[in-house]
Picture (cartoon, rainbow, N blue to C red):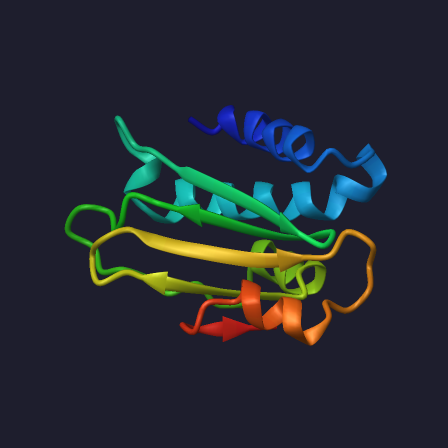
Length: 136
C-alpha cells in the first residue's frame, strides 16, 4: 500500500540509529525506491509486497528494495535516471546504486548511502556493491 512508504522511512530511520538530519538522505532514498517498486511492478497490485533490507558498515549504509516483478502482461522495465525525479534524487543522494534481477521475476534496486556526506572509501564501496549493474 502506498501508505506503507511512510512506515518504510520510519523503519529506515530507526534502524540507522542516526539523528533525523543525518538519516534524511537514507530515508529519502528508501522512500523513492519503495515508491518506485509500488508504481512500476506487481508490488503495487493486490497482495503485492516490497522487501527492504539495510546493512551498515563503518557508517555507510547499503539499502536494497526488492519488488514482486513485472506487472502481469508487461515486460520488466530496468531502472534508469530519466524524466522523473525519483531516480534522479537517488542518483544524487547515493554514492552508488544499481539493480539486479528482472526477466519478469523480482527486481532488486540497491543503493549505498554515506549519511556523513563524504565519498565512500573504495574498500567499503567494493565490499558493499554487488557485481551487477552499477550506476552513480
